[in-house]
Image (cartoon, rainbow, N blue to C red; front, side, top):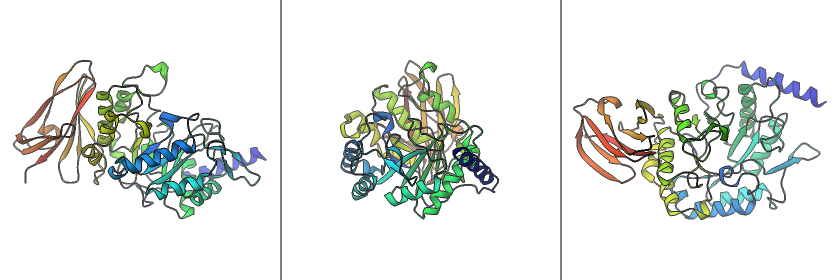
Length: 396
């Protein structure tokens, strides 16, 4: 019986893949990149529990993060244990004694939104039950609980299972609930989701898992910040309102990088128009971490309503310049120094689509200093493994 069910799912998902696709999913959510918190990077499986999640919601509601735009409180893997006699997914009662409906109600009571995690395969990456064969049943359960965000992983898939059709099946299951739910595809960029996921999900992982390091050694697995930066280069045109390239969650505050590196990490994610999903213990974060995560000027770049992701316009060894057009016609520019030494980095107006004669105001988004009446170019001293992030706004 189990074998027949599995083959039926594969056949059904193959059928979905043949349907014509619109340019992008328009389910009314994620018109700017989602902002919030995810449990995995700090708490993983062992540390996840109801107390941690409630404390996180309390902190985000009170410490300025909610006002800055962070709204989703997302459980990652390990909240579920199995299925009951009717096939309904069951909650880990040791970790979540009040249940997920009560937890969702608590989070909603804080003016925040609630997210959960599942997997397209037979099991999640941590060995908990996946959603294959239960897509519509699980989607209805999530909606009944009050879920606002679903992340679906790509572990323990069947031989030959098709990514596009599998995720399309869950997209349709979520739509059938009638509840607006952000849909996050997490197949690690293995099947080039930017080519097909626009009409399927609100965001899709474009890279393998992030690690808390500037440039990870390959034996660690996953990617460091600079490796992800390289992977994001060239796919910016596939991103936009309601459908976003996702370079994975933030590591800011988890201890593996310097403050300068974390500042560069946060800046580049904003340049990418990436989801900003915090992955640290926000109830106990340092002043440096808080200052990074609450930089309203950098967040405004990430959340710019035009939704045009930044692109790399210059690379010379360890020197990079990235530019992003904003809705008011100005540019956000990141001067990135990947080297071990401080360097002077400049950007010419012609690099970012302006005539050299144009006069503009340059504002540094980390020091909050302005230089008026600049023309032709701008240059700054950039620390090792750091970034100078500016907006360049033409005079009226």
